[in-house]
Image (cartoon, rainbow, N blue to C red):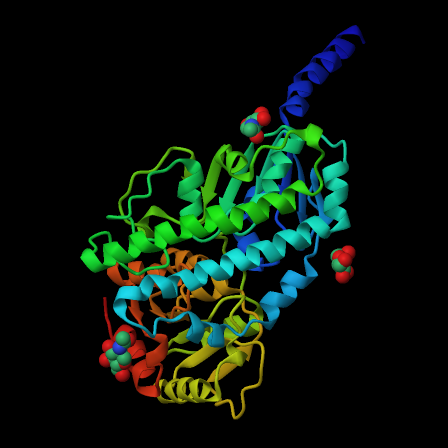
Length: 438
Ligand SMILES: *[C@@H]1O[C@H](CO)[C@@H](O)[C@H](O)[C@H]1NC(C)=O
Ligand SMILES: *[C@@H]1O[C@H](CO)[C@@H](O)[C@H](O)[C@H]1NC(C)=O
Ligand SMILES: *[C@@H]1O[C@H](CO)[C@@H](O)[C@H](O)[C@H]1NC(C)=O
C-alpha cells in the first residue's frame, strides 16, 4: 500500500512539469479572410495539443472541439462586407498600370494605399467591438501574443503592452515592406524588389528607381499619415498612466515574425534570424469525396482544376471573359473542375463542373490532375509545388504576380496576362503545359 502511494506521489510529481510547461497564448486574428487563417490554423491547434492554453479571437470556430483550445467569436461584420462586396475584377483594372513605365511605382502604390485605408477601417472596427474592449479591460494573463500586425492591424500591438507579453507577428503573403522596417531587416532598394513588383533581383536603372520611389513613398505616407492614425485608434482606450509608447516603438519591439512563404519564392537577400519562413505548414492531404474521386478517375485525359482562391469570385468576371474561358475549356475538351461563386454561368458545357468549393489539396493530389489554373495566391502556389501540378497563372495583385513569376522561373508555370485572356491565349497556355512531357 505504502509503495503504491509513493508511486502515485512520484507520478504526480512527474506530471507537474507537464502543466507548468504550458504557456498561455493569446491569438487575435480579426481579419475575416479564411485564406489568412487557414495557413496558420495547424500551428495554433498543435500548440494546444501539446499542452499550451491557446485562446483564439476570430471568426473561424474549430469544426471539432480541441483540448486546451478556447475560441472567442470575434466577427468583423463591416470588414467582411467590404471584402464580400469588392469586385476583384474591377479592382484589378483599377490598380493596373495604364501609364508611363516611369511612374509604375504609383500604380503599385495603389495597392499599398488600399491596404492603408483598409487597415484604418479594420482597426476602427476592432477597437469599437465590445468583445475586444472586454479583452483590453480584462485581468487575464498571457505569456505570448500572436497577431497579424502588418495587414493593417498595427494597433493590436497594444496587447503586448497590456499583457506585458512578447508579440509574434505573422504575415500571410510573403514579406511586406513594413515587416522589414520593424524587424530591423535591411531593405535594400537596389536589389530587393518590393513584392508588388515582378522585377528580379537584377533590376535595371528604371526599375531600381521605381522600387526606391515606392519604398520611400510608403515610408513617408506611413510616417505622416498612417501610423499617427493607427496610434490614435490604439490610444483611445488607454489611460495616461498606461504610459503607452508610440505605435512605431511598439512595432519595433515585436519579438519575431512568421512569414507564410518559402525562400524558393523569393530572391537572395539578407535576413535577420527572427524572420522565420513557415510556408507550407497547412499542407495536409484531404480525402476526396466519392463523387469527385469517380469523376477524376474516370477522366482518362486528365482534369484541369480552376480556382482563383477564396476571395476572388469567378462569377463576378465580365460576361466577355466568362465566354472566352468557357470557349477555351470547350475546345480543350478535358474535364474542368472550376471553383465558382458570386454569379451565374449560363449554358455550362458538359465537361465543366462548377462548385462553390473543392477539397483543393485532394484534387491537386489526384494523379489525374494535370493542370491548375490559378491566381497565384501563396497557399495555392505552395500546394501546386507540393503536389507537383503545373500551373497557368493569371495573377491579380499583391504578391500574386511575383509568386507566378517565380513559378515561371522555376519552370512550373506559364503566365497568362489578365489583359490577354482570350480563348486563343488560354488554349495556348493550357496546351503549352499539357503537351509538355517533362
Ligand atoms: C458570432 O458573432 C456574430 C456577430 O456577432 C454572429 O452573427 C454569429 O452568429 C456568431 N457565431 C457564433 C458561432 O456564435
Ligand atoms: C517590449 O516587449 C517586452 C516583451 O517582449 C516587454 O516586456 C516590454 O515592455 C516591451 N517594451 C515596449 C516599449 O513596449
Ligand atoms: C498572349 O497570348 C498569346 C497567345 O494568344 C501568347 O502568345 C502571348 O505570349 C501572351 N502574352 C502574354 C503577355 O501573356
